[in-house]
Length: 323
Figure 1 (tube, one colour):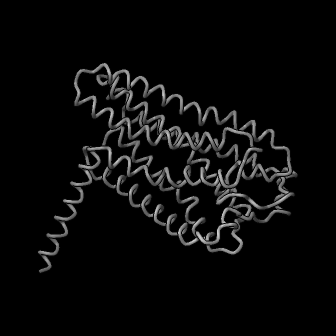
Figure 2: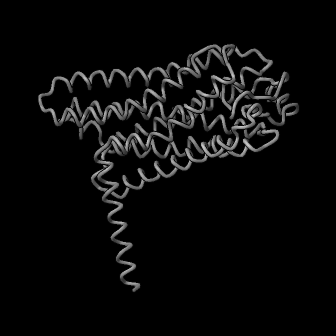
Figure 3: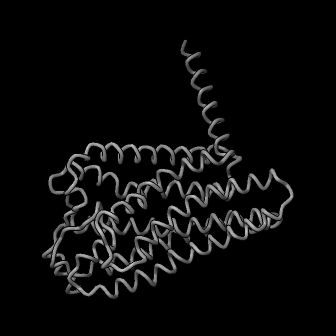
């Protein structure tokens, strides 16, 4: 076993989460806010998954990826918000060494997987709009499964690297993490070991896991926009633009906050600013994803309406039979 890891096991048993330490009056507001956003995320994303599974018209590559995104967002927000909600009322919020490692591992896994999944969704829209005659062949069921699996595998590999590097450091200075949850930048900022390798890995791997999918997505939508503007059919163009706008909104929020968090020197880490970005990156994005897709996507709204009408009809029939 690595020496620094052995030291951590003996000297650091837990980390203190200092994100809520200086918050006194706003605790009730934050608790209600986090709990409300968590419930909205669970209900919204669960509804999208149910609608996609129960509606045959939505069994297409675009909605396959949307269902994966909804499942990922449920997992993503569940890694942090339940613990954060409990910590609001704790006198000394803490997390065990192993618990911190697990939380960061799943957080980084899901963030990396979402980046590749968003790029897959962009590629799907590019083929659907720019290569419609070959769309069925290019986006077969097997291809979609491979793309989704690749997204998850890349997320797991990325998290394994960063979790191993981060928790083999020595934390002899302090065990206080200036954040609501365990993440790479605040952990590196309190380590008394040399973090140059970690920062280099964060930047180098981040180019592949973060920037590459981001630029790939931007290029895909640039090509889509060029193709849309060249079309004569206004109805088709409007529908394509509407679908792309909903996707781009998610992309900008996710990648923008992610790049700000991980692509800058650890020495520039600031408590209040980075806590705000952390909330945006880990809580707001998974919460608004179902709202964006349901409000801007006519097919999803129609499928939801049909599902509600069907459930209402079943309920009325049961009540009639009981009477």
